[in-house]
Image: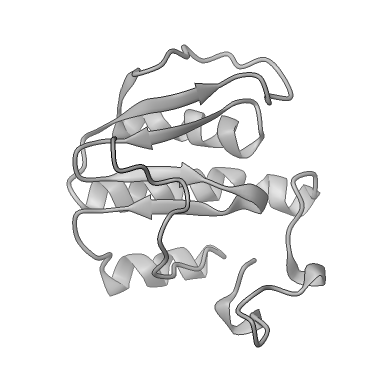
Length: 144
């Protein structure tokens, strides 16, 4: 999954290496993505994020979670929400004063933290099949 070593000369991943939203192997990784994101937030001392730019129009199914613009969620509550976004049930940005979690296409997840992740955390994520790279979220807004 998105191993940085697989990038081509332009920095893109070959199409054969790009996961698709309906791939069963990727479906099995959804809880792992959610777990890694919450571990990163917890390790950085982030306690809460709020749901911003909630969009139910593009969703592919019902969501058995409370959903409303501005909903404030503790880090331990975020996992099911992250999983629902990754399953394309709804879309939204999760943001706080010092941190955020944004989701893009094909399981791209952008986690902004107040400090860099420890080597232990990035190694743990890699062991689970998640590769952490420095990257600017294309979903970041200055008015958040």
